[in-house]
Length: 259
Image (cartoon, rainbow, N blue to C red; front, side, top):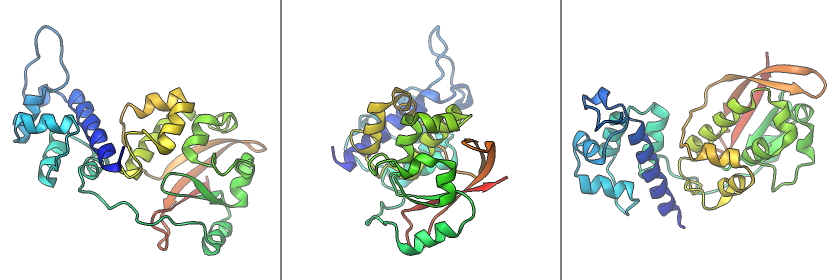
């Protein structure tokens, strides 16, 4: 499946999901039948968004059509999407940031930057592969030095590494946060339908990940507290910060500042 079809399938699934979550009462619509229906019908969405039922149905069928930015913004308002969800919707519809044309790699300059930090820090590529880290991160997560390059991916490790799971006292909450952030940050660049790449690999290895991924949650990053069961220090608290290196905009520098 090509990337275009993958994005259309993700757009279709995302619209269906958010339509099912919509509050009928908020749009002045009555309950349907004897059961309480919380979502909207396709024809109701089309009427409220100002498009034809046929055209909106094609969107949910992943047809090869090009929705305008105006229509997608109308749907975002209709479904009361958050800013990060709206950005994700626009990206799936072809109105977001362009995918990186090149993939950056670890350079001596970036390694010196990471090494200069006195607290745990590591660099992620666009698919969340861990491509560089410092000694402080090795001390926090000793196994990183022995993990194979193929498995050195944050999503893979969070859902398949028993040691890392034990290190996260709030694993259930954090794992969901990771999945939502991954979906938001990749913006449909990495075959969002999940037929290939890291999403397919983790889905095959972890039913927990597969279930969370199918829930289509999107979460933006904000500086937050992180808890770790340190192998020597016990429970430790950090504040997570994310930065993008100017010379490598497709990479993300994650830093854990002690609290």
